[in-house]
Image (cartoon, rainbow, N blue to C red):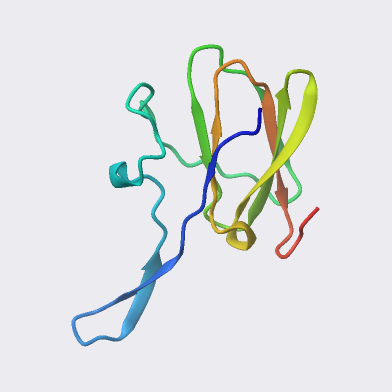
Amino acid sequence: MPLRIHKHSKRATRNKKGSNNGSLIPIYNIHDNFISEDHPPKQVYVTICDVGSVKGPHLHLKRWGYFTCIKGNIRVIVQNNGIYEDYFSGEDYDYATIEIPPGHPLLFKTLPMSSHM
């Protein structure tokens, strides 16, 4: 079963004079209809992982997970029916949000920019 992924566009923001003043990346928007009402987020937090480091493995038996890399890139390795699958998020991957159902072990590793391993 492939995991669901929802890509996001980085959007420029402007001040009242119309000049660029930064950007935003939408992570969760109820109007996207990506996250089911049956399992809405109960926590939202930022995890910081040093370049080349690994976080995990993690296993949540009851809770859904949603991972979006907002700076740099990550490779998410998910065990699905005994098979390991790779998913990617971050600046080179349209800030994709990766949905992880309960019962699927995963770990993630930071990647160098422009790395499509």
